[in-house]
Length: 121
Image (cartoon, rainbow, N blue to C red; front, side, top):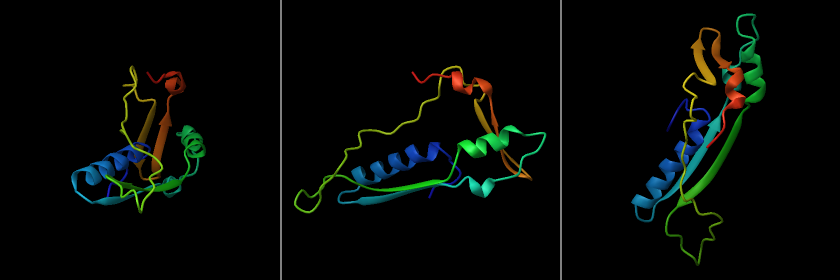
């Protein structure tokens, strides 16, 4: 189980499941991903008005997928082939376009205005 990975967790879960399936003959992995932001909800305050914006942008979600290698063509019909899963750090993003801080009031997410200006290569 992996905890507190946020958006990053989806790709991480897929990589771990793919690795388990490919490196253990006959293995099938059930990958379950859930991101629950409502658990860290906190009301707006004057000191962190952008926290309410982030709570409106980032909602709850869940997904599951069965990951295997070498499918039995007589019993299984794979729909997709996972080639790779990765995350990339965007150039010039070291200032933190999105920052999350754990406080007594909950998780405070700070959004930088320049976040929308960052381009994926």
